Image 1 (cartoon, one colour):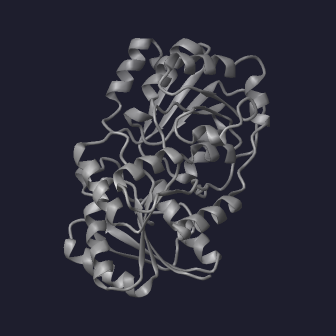
Image 2 (cartoon, rainbow, N blue to C red; image 1 turned 30 degrees about the horizontal axis):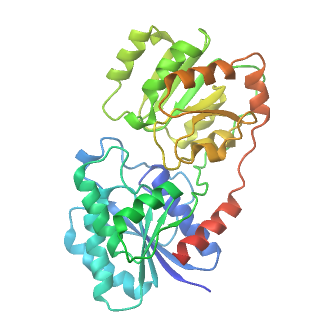
Image 3 (tube, helix red, strand yellow; image 1 turned 45 degrees about the horizontal axis):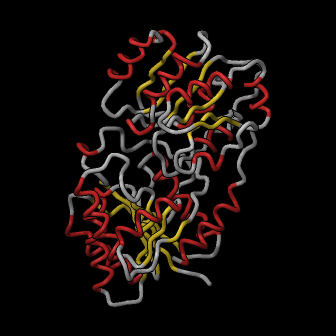
Length: 368
């Protein structure tokens, strides 16, 4: 049955996985026959709460045509009005939740939907139920939102259990929709070149829970002395602490800290220069970086945090180790660089088929 769906979340010119996910979801829902709009932001966060770059000039995929940018964190008077308008336009409003910072606006919007006294359902789609580095107020904000939503969707069973605890008794249980691929359009991988690069790659926002400090220790202890590491992405808090750690470990000349957002067009060259992408996360919900590496023909060394291990075929297209364990990660790096192993694992890499993931995801979301 066709539905009228409003997705509330970031879209271009906002950057990164959140904007790509919202946009791809809109395209996929429309492709499945659902009348879909995106209600996006003209100002999503105060700059002080997001120290990285928020927007980009060139879109990282095909923009969705029915996208509006009316929401602003500093205009609470517009939240309620937006909810009223969406209640008239849609029978399902999906609030894409990335951070508790969004919750005040979402509560205002939800109040506007409710005031319309229609049958519009409101679903909270939680990319993160709570932040990896959380504050006490985050729990209160998310509890307020999840208890008011008609349905809640999370991206893993662990996250669904966390949401259920916040939602409280007497409410429908959160459902799990496994995160589908939503990769940036990079122009595809560069032509394959045989041989080892003797370089590893960490890609993405650098925050403590992502474990780059553990990767530096593992590089010093487990990788051959001629293997280097590129860390490419936005560094929350700057590069000084990691640069100092690399110096203490005696590997400063083997570590390239490339600070700043990495445009989609730069990704093929980064992957082409690496033997493997490394995801040393202490904790995780879901990540696109396993699929992104495989899309560019590169194996992955990852921890078993969150859903990372679900997309790595250990010993076929990557290696796995325990999260938070620098020694275990060092052993994985040493095993990866056994003679012939990088080329063998590279030969096992296959790009993901996104279609089935999206069909299941859309069905679960609209049934929540």
